[in-house]
Image (cartoon, rainbow over all chains, first blue to last red; front, side):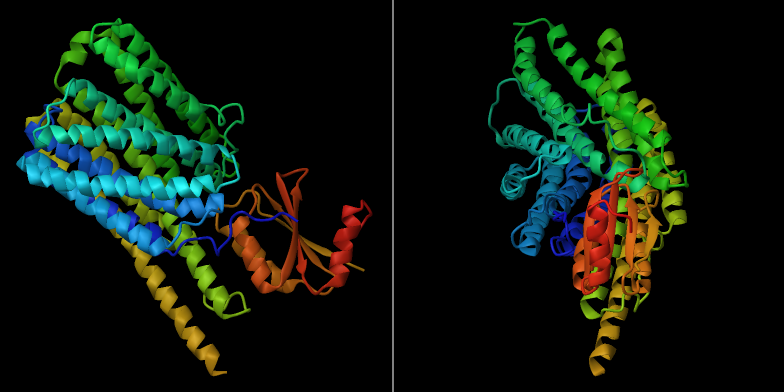
Length: 447
Length: 91
């Protein structure tokens, strides 16, 4: 008899992941409004305070927010390692991350040191609280699946990234730091590739075959890709510092980043290939999100490569902004939205199923909506096209900020609003069916 | 005399496999079991089966990655049939 690692009992309460998933679109909306408010300046230079604020509203408020919820959900389910006191832990981390992100964005925009100090304290508590809890759970995991291994490395990258972020934050409270530009590049590389990129790859190993009915990721790829990218990043870090101190030629750093780009390209191409060989080819909007994301990842790697060989382009102020926009808005956001459209309906369905089983031995007492009814495909598909317009406009706005940043901000705001509406719609359906089940329970107890 | 239901859910999206399995189980009569063809282990199913009073056997499949046999925990005939199957005897 196979002993299950995953069970309904180990699934944390629905509020644990949902509080993160439902807050994320609000931060996306806030970031869009900032783009609308301060657009042209914001897209011209990566060092502009509003640009830093917008970047962190997206990377912390949207991306990390979802990642926190996903990991707190997946750890007990995939690893059989429950998070202790899940509601207390998740609500504390959620409040700290929410307030910390708001303080950080406000600190960048206003330049108030006390705001930055409170952001550093709140985010520090949030990150190291999260890291401590997840590390505790991962220690208890017996399995060594590629997803669990990948999560460990992504968590390691988060430790490094959070430390770099806190050190950099001290710049804003009057502490003088050596090589602030180099530290910033290390921070964003460990954040975007280490924490976000490695976690997406690790979770993709699980969710792409499961939800998109594809073959499994090849076993020659999954055990080594994430650890290898992590170790190259680790090796690259001191060497990049030496490059900036003119102790090493720039090609050393570029070569290592090139290897990372190669690894990420292999992941993108393998994913696209798996999706082209789906076992059952039925229309699925989340597939579109993933395909856009993989193409966005490939584009960002190509654009980086072009910048290496065409230094005039790399020196333009818009180049790093464009690179960041394509990586974040063109790769990370669609993949996360694609995941949300599968994970949220699945969790709603799973929890309703569980509630129903608690009250009766008759399996189909209250009709439980299936996944496609929790968030109807047509709503997700409409939001997808709004997102595609927002992506095109945001990329175009980097090249023509004065003319397009306002429109890009409005359409991006619509995209996040629509996403939020779809996710909240799933929650409303959950509540409505949950009440029906509770009512049925009341009737049953009368007999 | 035992008989079985076979259900191939290997190409269905979550949560369809679980829904179809749960819809088929009430049809099992004494001595009958459900043979499920799946592409991955349906972990959430197991605790439901336990609650509903079913026993299961999961093993690597020949045509699909995973095969699961499910029968009522109180059904000794179906359990014996599964045991015979494990011993390589025809059902």
